[in-house]
Length: 520
Length: 116
Image 1 (cartoon, chains in turn purple, orange):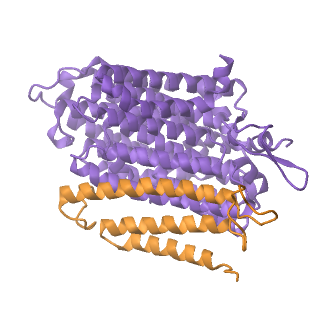
Image 2: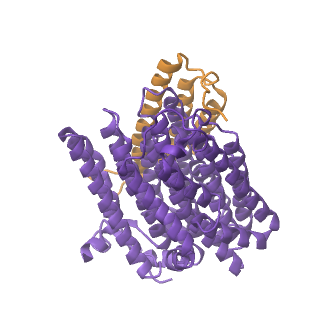
Image 3: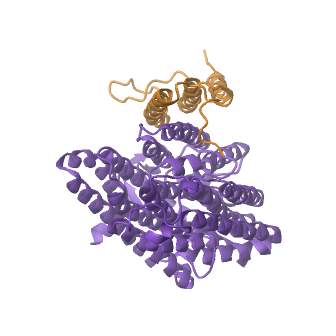
């Protein structure tokens, strides 16, 4: 058990990676064996993420070090007498563990939802293989303490995500979406790589903690920061770099849309890690914070207004997913803008933004799953051709309402808890921010009333699938429980997991650096 | 003879040329070429970071004593980046093939059923 806890960070990546490459072999044994294997891998991965989170939050979110390559034995002696250990590290702290929990929640429910969702005769093995690869990449991005590793994991997620969007080559639109998304993901990855090259050229290191300790905030650093900001904002789907997001979420199979949202959140995590831990106060954080706030307001507003005019159910949910990224950016942006003086409301904003990541993952996941059920039942994605689903699918309609209300920030669901923290803190910085955020939430409610009216209400149409298979129902109920429990007891979860995560970004820079370099 | 900062200038030119191609060309294959150019530029930049004038490759076996070596880390990074670039380019080109089969064209201006 101790060994398992000690090695949890690397196992979190190794096990899905093993799964990804073993699935094609196990798939030869038949559908049942393959699904059992994928289910087992997903369960183990989620259990490991839970174990890691329990350990990290047990230490109040303090960072811990996982070393590959030997901390003592294999060192490079320098002429000056110092010796530099040759190693690659993972450095999970409160924020990483929090993200790992989100990823575990979405990948576990996504895997189990897929078993019933994926009924096509072929393509399933490819689907699960890419899915596991994506899982490994997302965990890697969240745990690594090394810039270049971050880039490699980023590219792993890019390639496997685009594989998932476009592997159904018989669908016309998925190919268009796949090309567009891959082109933009590649460009974002190259921006990140260029920035890493600039930092390496100046400081001769790739370790985040080492770079953070030597950064001076020179012009080249600021260029690198700009490149990282553009690259990661693109990968997270922030407006004006969001054009790929509705295509990606809309054209991927429904359970994978939820995982793609988790992937976007991992890029957002990378951005926060770079802003708070790597750069910290070496650059003008107020300017950066306001840049994030402007991006956030654009993202919220454009996301919601574009959602209003959609008639394709998945594209509609995809645009609302884009708008939710804006709320996270708004929370953390407000925190960053005031992070020199560190007033109380800045920390509240950070808590809200970070808490919203988890809440958004749960309710967007629920909505994408529900849209998958609806598409399976009606055979169409066009809202104008649906109607009367509530007659035959009572449970799905109830779950859909829960997800929609939570996303729009209606109490007592979880979206309200985090959005309220964001509104409150944003109001203290500038009332205008809170007004835009609240208005957009109300518009979002209108969006979901539209879906609900189009898809669920109305007269009973032809004989539809009577009720959802139990295999699709259980993951949806699990996510709905998360939505409700987090909405009913937000205080408990904010104390236990959100505060350590926010602390890790807001105060944790010195501890993060000190753990790697000693002293501090 | 030292080559000075010439490689950096070439790397920057390649990146700018690639981004120009990406933004202003409509043929999908040309877009892939643009991305490939950016990638080559970034790779050249990485290799150049580790370059030392009159230095040898960082391989210890049979290396003459007291020779300067170029930095090995950027080369390792470049190698990784090249492998990733291969995967992305292959994926992009295969998407382009399937797009051509479905739409009968490679003109990005005509392939826009996913809009708004």
